[in-house]
Length: 277
Image (tube, rainbow, N blue to C red; front, side, top):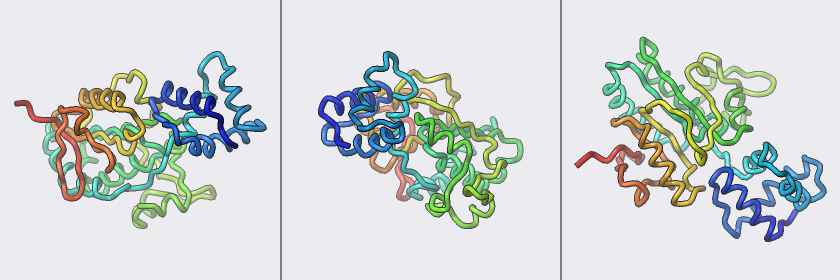
């Protein structure tokens, strides 16, 4: 299913309008491969007919949002890239826990949680290496995503054999998952303390609590400079003074927001508040 120049421009506009996603010329193949199957499943003879239907809708609705969800890349796996989680375990969490020992509260935000592997990885890391947090501490993980489809999988916590084979230690699989006919299910005990909530980073944000740790990994690469600056500014406003921001390996705050300073922990780079002069 090939796409015309005008249809591509419309889809690019829609993606930016709904989710601030930048789809540049040259990515026609991406739109074709992602939306072609969607058009077929919806019963349209061609991608052109499907997009024509989108244009005729007088108001933005669920069909438009599902279309943009199909364009988003939801590639993720357990303990992705390893080094950030190792830095968290070895250096960052001990420092944060020391800062929060009086309040006995730890708040984490997985700001683009996709199908849930990241927040569940965080929950397992806390259980395995900081069991003392189970005694009198209030630990909460907020997991948000724009795409409702993957967010629903995250809530269910059901993963295929292929998905649990990607990054998840076998001991964790046995300890925190139960195998059923449709896949591996996260145990209810691990789910407790994780709240899954839809959120579009490009739209006005709801009231959020102050966070000790924010994970916004492998998302900023899809936004333009203005959107990146706006998101970083908002995160800075809800990141506690001792808090840390985790970005993807191809992302940075450099030349975007001087209020952050990069900090190196082993092979991982994270971002904290720039100290006041």
